[in-house]
Each structure stands twice: as C-alpha cells, then as structure tokens.
Amino acid sequence: MRLGLPFLLALPFLLGPAAGDWGDLETLSPDPSPSSFPSYDFSPGFSSGSGSSSVSQSFSNFTGSKDDRGTCQCSITLPDTTFPVERVERLEYTAHILSEKFKIELSKVKEYVHLISVYEKKLVNLTVRVEIMEKDTIQYSELDFELIKIEVKEMQKLIIRLKESFVGSSEIVDQLEVEIRNLTLVVEKLETLDKNNVLSIRREIVALKNRLKECEASKSEMVPATPPPPAPGSCSHGGVVNVSRPAVVQLNWQGFSYKYGAWGRDYSPQHPGTGLYWVAPLNTDGRYLEYYRLYNTLDDLLLYKHAQHYRIAYGQGSGTAVYNNNMYVNWYNTGNIAKVNLSTNKVAVTETLPNAVYNNRFSYANVAWQDIDFAVDENGLWVIYSTEANTGNMVISKLNDTSLVVLNTWYTKQYKPSVSNAFMVCGVLYATRTLSTRTEEIFYYYDTNTGKEGRLEITMHKMQENVHSINYHPFDHKLYVYNDGYLLNYDVIFKREPQQDV
Image (tube, rainbow, N blue to C red; front, side):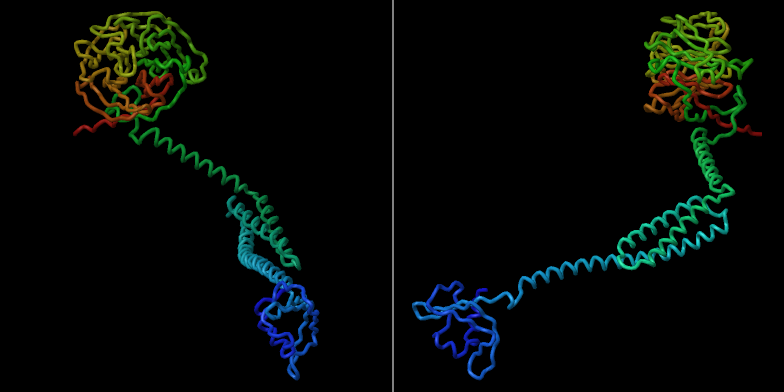
C-alpha cells in the first residue's frame, strides 16, 4: 500500500523528535529509489517522543533515502491486516443482494397474507352456499356449480403456491388444502345427486325458449303484422300492401347456368288447391324455351323426383304462365301466342296478339325476349305487352283462355322497358323495378276495374340480381319468382277491405 499526501502530513506527528536525524521530511515517494539507508521496521511498540503517549502501528518494509537537495523520501508498505478493504466491499455487495432478496420475499409474504385473507372469506362463503345447496336440490342451476368449481380451483392454485414457498412448517396450509379438496368432492357429489333432472330440464327449457324467440323473430320479419288474409281465390281486400321475405325453394333443375325462365303453380277455378307445380327454364341463350317439368307436389319438386319431363320446340322468353292445365307461351320469333295442353304436350290453339311488338322490341329492363308476358289471377288469364301505337307503354289485355281471343284491353302510361317485371292480382297490374342487387320495389299499379293508376313503395328482397318472371297464384296468395336460376316464393299481404258507410 502506497501512501500519498495525507500520510506525509501525519508522519512527522507519528515520528516526533526522533525524525530529526533524517532532516526535513517533506515528501513520500510512491516509488522510492534504492538507497544506502538501512531498512527500518516500525514495530507495534514504537514510541514517538519521550514521555508522550505511544501510538501503536504495524508498519513493515520501510525504506528511506535522501535526494540531491537533501529532502528525505520514504516508502512504507502496510499489511492487508491493517484494514480489509476487499472484504468490506464483498460484505457490502452481499448485504445489498440479501436486502433485495428480503424485499422480494417480504412482498410475496404480504401478497400471500392478503390472498389468504381473501380466500378465507371465499371459503366461508362457499361453505354456506354448499350447505344451502345440500338442503335444497331444486333451487340451483348449472351456473352455480360452474362458479363454485372456478373458485375452488383458484384456491387450490393458491395452496400449491403457498406450499412451494413455505420451507418450514406447513401444517396450516396442509389443513387448508385438505378442506378445499373435501369441498371439491362435496360439490361433485352434489352435482351427481340431481335426482329430479333439474339441470337437464332447465337446459331443454332454455333451448326451447331460444327456438321460440328465433321463431317469433323470423315470423315478425317474414310476415308483417297484418289482418287475416282473405279466403283463397277471393278479392275481398283492398289490394296488395306488402310481401314477405322470400323463401328460397331451390335452384332450377337445369342448374345455375340457366338463369332465365319461369316457374309457378297451375291454378284451376274448379280445383284451386290441387294444381301442378311447373318449372320452365330457358336455354342458356336466355330466349329459347325448349324443356319444362311438371311435379304433382311441392315435395316432389324439392326432391327432384316423380317429375314429368317434356320438350317443346316453339317457346320464346320467360313470360310463361299456366292456367287450368294449359301452358301459355309466346311462339318463337313471332308475335303469336300459343296454348299447350299439359296432359298431351300438344299445341291446342295459336293466335296472333293484335299490334303486339315482339323479338325484344319492348322487353322488360334487364330481361330480354319477354315482350309478351302472360299472367293469371282470380279473374282468369291476362297478357301484358306493348305496342308501337302506345309508344312502348304497357298494354293489358284480358284473354279468353280457351280461344285466346282478346276480350278487353287497357292502355297504361308506364313505359315497359323501365319495368323489371309485372303480375296481376284481382284485375290490378303491379309492376316492379330494380333498386339494388338485392332489392326490388313494387312501384306502380293499374286497376283495370276502375281505370286508375298510381305509385307504390313495396320492397321485395331477392337472392340474386335479376328477376326474370313473377307469377301469382290466387289460391295460396303467393308470388312465384324466377331469380337468376333460383326459385323463390313470397306471401302476398293484402289491405283490409275499407268499411262501407252505413
């Protein structure tokens, strides 16, 4: 150990008068050079001065010399036993580490003390709840068991943590663990003692309630709140005021590529409730009607079974309708109309529709080759078309369904190519237009009974973008819609007949 200036100042005091033999002691060189001075050993019993108090020191390896100017220089090496600096540093570091560890462990202890107090209260609460459940096997639910299980599992985790942390005695912790394990067994046993099947019954009740809510929501959405419908085939109402959301029956039997076509149900005034279901998709060119199928029931149609498959070579467009076991079509590439007997698949009658344009002159919007559109309602057979004289506006004609002779004609002010499709109900024409890819709107009507026409705002939801045909059935009050290859139907909602003044 080399001494610097502080030792230099203290050395004369330590040596006292005995140092006078060396001259003025001013500097202690940290690196003394060799000299002829003898080495001195300051033993612990060295005395400074006569009669004064002695100062014990333990110096060794003392050397001294004098430079050219007569200044005395000396070097003293102190032994490690004088002051253990390295040991003190190690002690301080160890004390710091122990202090940090103590703080961590103390915080854990505080946390465990808090958790123990919390779970002690939970355990008391659980005990009370389990006692109540043991006495009464009815007033509990599956949720009660699940909540208890969760709390017991949390306490078990805490016990495991406490056991891992405690090194010494853990009798209290062990006892607490046993009590919690017993509580778990009691809960599991109590859950199995559901003699009255309360939980299973409650599950079934909840499931039934959910299904009932879904059914009520679906019903309220599908069928708006309306008065009772009129009798089948009756016109004792104030007209169409709404339609339900569509019921998707299925994709047509030809497949998705056959986007154009028509479908519906035969209506016979003599047998209104027993009509055949028919599906007539056009070929992929969207013009040629070549094949159609008949089904005795809707179930047969849904299952694609017991179908009567027929071919004709003269149909055009998707304005087809079926009435009284006869199919009515526009004859290919002409302005003629034809009646096909469904029992024989033979053409019974053909007739020219006076002044009617054809071959895509005034077809519906987004639907080609439907210049002539047949319709059926409570009053019989109708045809909707346009003439040059009426500048493309819609014309309605009532037909004799046997001879196809025009019985009466009404001229509207509604431009046909701006209409997406149309249908007849109780002598009233209803026209639709496209609002978006998923909605149509019944926006126009013409009443042949009164000659009045006007605007409506009845929204029709759809599955695909384009509506290619709409056929109304008077008995079941449904619209049969061919929507880009999909077969949809809608329930028609009628307005209550206005009360007559007495």
